Amino acid sequence: MVKWFWQRRETGRKLQLRSRDELSGANRVDFEELAPDIDTFLGQAAYLQLGFFETLSELIQTTPELAEKEALSRAAGAAFTKHEALVALIRERGAEPTRLMLPFREPLDAFRRATHGVRPEETMLSVHITAGMLDDFYLALSASYGDTGDRVARILQADAARQALVELIGETIASDPEWKSLLAMWGRRLVGDTLLIARAALRRATLGAADQEKVEPVFTELMAAHSRRMDAMGLAA
Image (cartoon, rainbow, N blue to C red):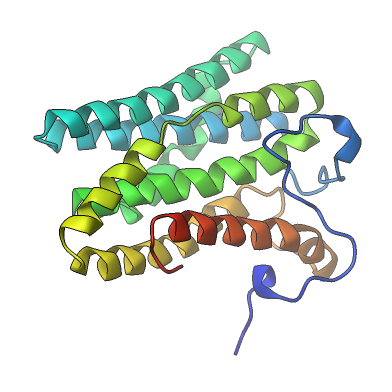
């Protein structure tokens, strides 16, 4: 059986995901050779948050129940707050946010379409899983950009209000046990597309053995965090 590079046995020196409580430079590991340039990093991160906001806003429009609309609005507002903070940081650096985000509009919109469920509950799970994985990945990348990276990390570490989505998904599962297997299957399908987006964010399209060894622990931890999110909802990863 073929194993992807994030599935291989861990060996040697590892690049670790940054702790969500740790912004000190003391524990950083050199990732600069694979990290994209700062403008690419900021443009991608900002457009991703805008995309999460758009998806959640669409869900609000199609959800009839007021309580669900309110829960979704909290998550949408948190994503938009992160987007605005990243846009402000881009402007502070003297760049135009639209120019930095535009190159990623097509691939990231395609990613949103690929991970948009047929049912609202699937789409809620998509946002919870994909946003969680990509926030973690961009948090890892942020260690490569000094003080600017620290500011991005703080933005990404802000409360995403996605617990509201988890609660709505939990209510759905409780209402009908068949949802559990359906959403578990959907959650597993999300992983491949999300890892491709993370992989495409790296500076080099093709990784040699040494580069793969550097990034392997990050993808291993992304998968571990994904499993924890699924387990917390009673879904099998």
